[in-house]
Amino acid sequence: MSIATVKVVEGVFSTEEKTGMIADVTAALAKYEGGSQYTIVTIEEVKSGDWGRAGVAFTAAEIAAAS
Image 1: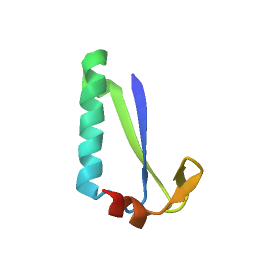
Image 2 (image 1 turned 30 degrees about the horizontal axis):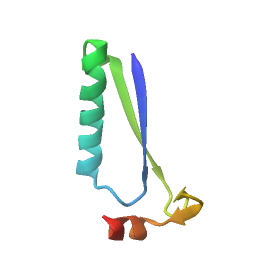
Image 3 (image 1 turned 135 degrees about the vertical axis):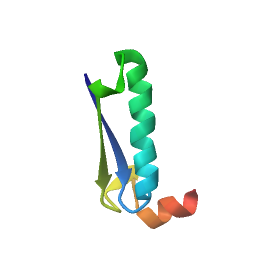
């Protein structure tokens, strides 16, 4: 059994995109575990502005604009 946590910035991904992430991560791990029934995937949303890279915090609007 494995548990995977995917962290994303709140407000950047739609419900459909998060559902797709869960399916894709489950499929990737199931390949090694012998079946998806042993895989748990959670998505955690980090508040806008509480996410950063190289010492700089990013907001959901900045991330969406960079896409």
